[in-house]
Image 1 (cartoon, rainbow, N blue to C red):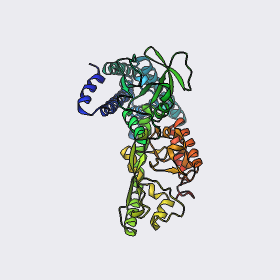
Image 2 (cartoon, rainbow, N blue to C red):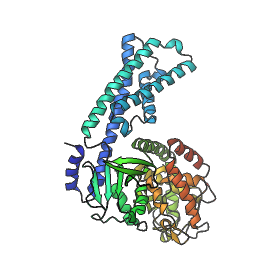
Image 3 (spheres, one colour):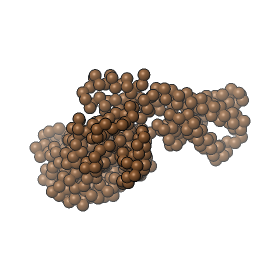
Image 4 (cartoon, rainbow, N blue to C red):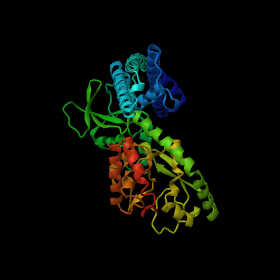
Length: 468
């Protein structure tokens, strides 16, 4: 029985209409992650087994730098390179040929790296060329076997498909494949109203966790749907007649019908895993280092003015869904602005003395690392805004329809716009448009290297003239 259909029956009984879809997609993604982890574990064992086999056949004892066997070092290096070469991506894992080739590419890169290290460290006399050859061949054979078994197992487990496709339609009698989920906009009362944050968040929640959205709707609402779907952070395509031309990033196919690809989503599953791992490791280090400072700050805030040390506010997060952001309270409790309707000014009379200092030095942002641990935020990403935020007299989403698209990724503690100098109040719509331009640029060019560069650049603007 297909995994998707089995989950469908269970979840449709357990959760209300609409909610089970998000849970279904989430479960499917969790299962994909488990498959990737299982494949990575088998890869590491294959590399280690290859070196162990060579050691047994050649009666050769490998060097163990720092007491760590070379097989373990090569396994770790292989996993890093395999992830870099997209060897754990969804399209790769489900095909035997592409999966094995991707693994062999990473193995060859590992071997070349090892040879360079041997040469630079003058260890050529300590290594047996024959043993190294046997280790490489053995590891390649074991990788081919494990990768083939993984691909076959994944295809059998995910007979309904390794990814989840969803169709949003307002058409009657659409001829869609049985393996996809179909959401009728009228039945679910889905209206792509760009001026209604509640409706925007509801649509994003409904599509949370899916991999590809196929849009089949009437021309009158097409533009609004396109903006909202691009903001979900998933790949989205538009069904069109074969002779139609529309602004798109590519051409695809859905069943027997042609589609135009509107967006491919900013991050693949593998990239999301790498970004999340980067966030968790760095966040734990920062929380350990800044723990005493945060305790002292919380104590000073409580001593200066009554009220809690932390300030919580609803902000717009990934997929246009809201979450509570945490900051150190820098204003008097009675003057707190829960909806963020009043922009903070340089000489704002609501600040306490300690509040003005922690905002100037960005110490007030430190509790947001707990948001990162909770999964609501990332260290690097577009800054989250309050629903009541305004640029001049206009709400943020009224300034530009593209505003919702900036939420395709998790919001960040810092981002590209911040290191470009766009911090502080948005006193006019040009301020928001400039930030929006950099936010969308970040989404389109994401890489772990860029995240690291933004993080290092942020250290130069922690104390900034616009930080108030």
